[in-house]
Amino acid sequence: MLTTVRARVAAGNEWVAAHPPPGPFPAGFWRSPIRGPWLTSVFGAILLVGIPVMFLTGLLSYLAYNPWLPGNDGRHASGVLTFIPFHWPASPSWGYRVTQGLHVTLGVVLVPVVLGKLWSVIPKLFTWPPAKSPAQAVERLSLFLLVGGAMLTFATGLLNIQYWYRFPGSFYVLHFYAAWIFVASAAAHVALKIPVMRAALRERRLRDELRTDLAHTEPEQHTPDGLVSARPAAPTISRRGALGLVGAGSLTALVMVGPQTVGGPVSRLGLLSPRGGYDTGDGPNDFQVNTTADEARITPALVGGLWRLEILGGANPVALDREDLLAMEQHEADLAIACVEGWSSGRQTWRGVRLRDLAALSGVDGPGSVYVESLQDGGAFGRGRLAGNQIRAGDSLLALQVNGAELSLDHGFPARIIVPNNPGVRNTKWVTRMTFEA
Ligand SMILES: Nc1nc2c(c(=O)[nH]1)N[C@H]1C(S)=C(S)[C@@H](COP(=O)(O)O)O[C@H]1N2
Ligand SMILES: [Mo]
Image (cartoon, rainbow, N blue to C red):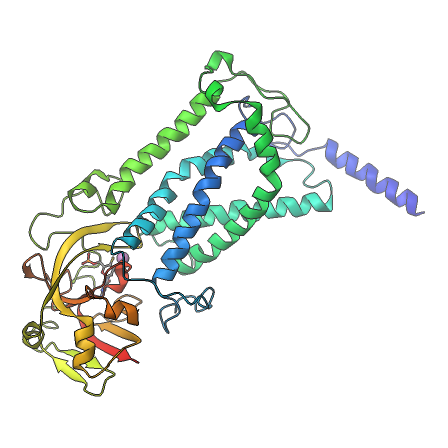
C-alpha cells in the first residue's frame, strides 16, 4: 500500500520534472556561453571584499548617531545594538566623513558588480522542478532572502542619496533591517559556496581570461544543476568584455559620485550626485546647504531680536541673546560637515562658543549629554542628543560665524551646532534650546 503511494508520488514528480512550464524554465533556455562558475566567482570574490566593508561602515554610521542616548534611536526604537557600550568619538574630526563617504561611494560602485552577479546566476531563478528535495527548497528560500535583502538594501540606499523617498515606511528601518537579512544570508551563502568558488577560480586564471578575445571564448564544462548552459550559443561577448563592461560601470559610478565626499570645488565633478555637479558660489557662506531656511520654515522674524538661546538643566538656567553669546569667549575650529548621504561641505572655519563653556555657564559640570532643539517645527530633523565626550571636545561649538562672516540663514543663523566627527544631521541649525543632563 505504502509502496504504491511512494511509486505514484515518484512518477508524479518525474512527470512534473519532464514538463517545465513554457518561458525561461526548460533546460537550455539560457544560452550565454560565458555564464558559468568562473564568471560568477569573480563577481562573488569582489563582493566578498566589498560587502563586509559596506556592512562595517554602515554599522559605524549607525553607531555614530549614539543610538544608546535616549531619543536618538527613536525611529526604530528596537534597541538593536544599543547595548554596545560605545561612545562615538569626537576625533579624528574627519572620521565620519571617510567612513560614510566610503559607505555611500562603495554602495554605488558595487551596483554594476551586483547586477553582473545576478545576471550570471539568473538561470537558477527558473530551475525546474522548483525543488527536488526539502533541503533544496530551504536552500532556494535562503537565496530568496539573499537576493531580496540585497535588492532592498541597495535600492533604499540609492533612493535615499537621491532624495527619492518613494518607499513604504522609514528609510532607516528598511535599510537597517534589509542589511541584516542580506548580510546574514550572504554569510550562509558564502559558507556554502566558498569551495565551489575556490575551485572555479583555480580552473581558469584571470590573467589568461583577460587575454582571451571573443573568437576564443569557449563555454565552461556543462554539469547538471550547474550554471553552464546545456546548449550554449555562439559568444557575443568575451568574459574579458563582460568584466570590462562591469568595470567601466563601476568606474563611472566612482567618478560621478565619489567627488561629493571631498566637498568644495571638487564636488562639481560629481555629475550624478545631487550634492555634486554644480557650483555653490564662493562667498564665505557658499558651501553645500542641506535644508534651506525656507524649507524649514525659518523666517527672519523667528531669528530676529526676539530670538533667545535657552540653556536648561543646570542650577543656573539662562536665556541668552546673540550679543550675550558674542560676548563670551570665542573659539575657532576648521571642520567639515559630513552627511549620512555621503557628501561633505569640505572644511570651513567656524567660530563661536564652546559647548562645554555653555554647560559651565548654566551650572552643569561634567554633563553626560545635551538635548539640542531648533526653531524648526516637527519631524526628526532639528533635534537630537549629543554625548558627554562630544560636549567636552575643545572644537565642539555653538557656531555664530563661519569663514569670517555671520552665519547665513541657510547655514543656521543665529547659532548652530558644529561638533567634530559628528554625522551632519546632529549639527543642528537654528538652535533655540539646549538641555544638559548629568
Ligand atoms: N534644524 C535643522 N538642522 C539641521 C538640518 C535640518 O534639516 N534642520 N539638517 C542637518 C543635516 S542632515 C545636515 S547634513 C547639516 C547640513 O548643514 P548645512 O546645511 O549647513 O550644510 O545640517 C543639519 N542640521
Ligand atoms: Mo545630512
